[in-house]
Structures are given as structure tokens and as C-alpha cells.
Image (cartoon, rainbow, N blue to C red; front, side):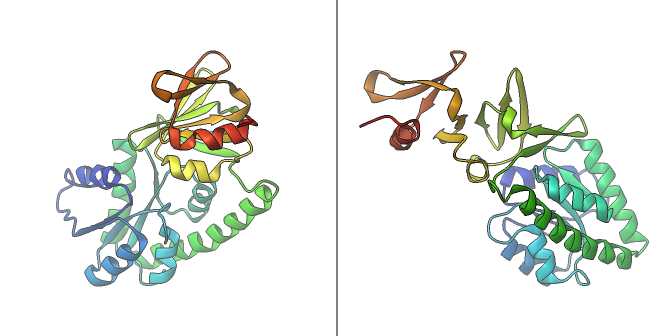
Length: 261
């Protein structure tokens, strides 16, 4: 088995799950697409757990470069890309949505193992080709529906084995929690496995601003910019919640708020 994910904790999670499976050997790991391609070609694993969202080459880029006809059995791992999810469903190829539970992991692994043991690699390759085809179609569709702004409109969140969609317009602010991000929407909090950098890039900057390495807020909810002792700053949101503002981001925040120097 080969485990590919740019997050160490995500790789360790899969490796821990595989440790309970008899007759399984993890022959390597990779934290980016280029290393994944090299490992697949040099180590010829029977099964690859392949992260979709990676900097540089994505999981689908890995499949394209290796070629669907030469890829091992593959279980995709994804965070919140609803378009990729739809593509995988159409292709009937298994996938895991972060954060996944033990039962969902076992279901995906058992299915892949059975196909490998039955030597139905032709079927797997057809499915990979379908992923590439549908993935391209879905990417084009996503651009067509987001060209006006080019930013996220919805985020898919897995909760208790089900995937629900959270409209971005309902999100008040986002905070980091280790390898996860917490989406705060009204009185609800949704947990996703995604970096703050990625969220910052994919959210409309006219609506959201990053005020700290661990916090992104909706601009229209910012009520007051407060200066505390020692030159530290905070934003107070409507409702009274206060969130720290890092010094490196204060000037950008003031500009976005229209604060005169």
C-alpha cells in the first residue's frame, strides 16, 4: 500500500487504520504529487490512498501522468470539493471524505481489496478513466457557475457518515483547530479538514478577510477594531465576539474596512 497526502496527520490516520488489516504492508508514503508519481513507478503498490487536494500536482494530476491504464487500485481522499465528490460518484470509484470514520474506511478498503483479489483491474482502470473524464467536465461546470466571482459558494461537510452542504453565505467566521478548520455559521459549527491558506484563497475577498493565521472573518460582521495594551488589536463582531488581529494583517484589515491612516 502507498499513502499519499500532504498532511502528516492524514497519512498517519490511514496508516493506523491499515495496521488493523491482516496481510497489509505499507511500502511507502508521499506528501506531494511528484513524490507520489515516483513512488508508484518505483514501488508498484497494489493500492494507493491518494489525496485529491495537494499543492502543485493534485491527485487527478497524478492519475493523468501515470496513466489510468498503469495506475494501481486507487482510493481517493478529499476534503470538501463537492465537484470532485460528484465525479467520483458518477464513476462509481470509492473515495473517503475527511474526516472519515472507521466504518467508512473499512468499507472503502474492503471493496478495493476485493477488486484486487478478483483481479478486476480492468474495471478499476475504466473507473479511473471515468473519473478523469467526469472530473474535467465537473471542473468546467464549476467554472461556468462561478465565473462571476470565481470563489466558493458552498462547502461540503461530512457529519456522522453523511455529507451536507454549507452555503458560504451562511458562514460568519472561520477558525483553525489543528489540522482542521471550524466553520461558524450562526449557532452551528462545522468541522472540515482544510488549511486556512486554501480557504483564504478560495473565499471571496470582498466578503471575507483573514485577520490572523488562525482566523478568517466576514467583513460585514466587523463592528469595531479595538486596540489593546501593548499594541495588540482585536476585531469585535456583531454580537460581541472578539477575535485577535495579528500585527502583520492589521494594515490590510484597516484598508479593507476603509480606515484612514
